[in-house]
Length: 255
Image (cartoon, rainbow, N blue to C red):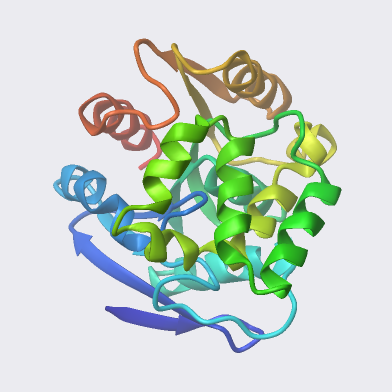
């Protein structure tokens, strides 16, 4: 494990593996850097992969109140540790964060995002409700509310809550409002995305809900020169064997 300090003093932990141009993986909700090990291993033959714990999770701490700008600064700090320039792949809300970073001029040489969740119901009010549950000492309820929001069947949530992995899932509860805030009240932030000069690929799964493909197309239509692609047969968690060749081909053209 390595670490870097963000401008507000937050320690951001990351792992570095593989060889080649720097590539940063940005995870979504209920994930940390342990979640991307198989993806990193598959990309490591072509890239020096950096997997990091976003603030407030894993081995990264958090100083001060949350803001999207601070999360952008965290990603920029990892890019600086990677040499001051990097390719970036963001999954789900991690993709939304990567887009916000690119829109603010963070030095990203190529950006791929998978199903950034600009979807109905991802409101500031819902983020506040999740924050209130955490403040009231109810992290499990916050996780359950979030899982229900993303469409997890009640019986599946009940099964998760009874399983050994539940305490780990609850450890992410304080970060769930952040994921919702990154969703921009459920709409693609076209006003900011028009500022992006980074070559961008927006991806979605063929069996995912309509919002995923519509969002990917809107992202590509908004960012100058961007591309979009649907991965047939894939859902919100695309299989590594499908995703790796797509990412490798796109990023190879950026280096």
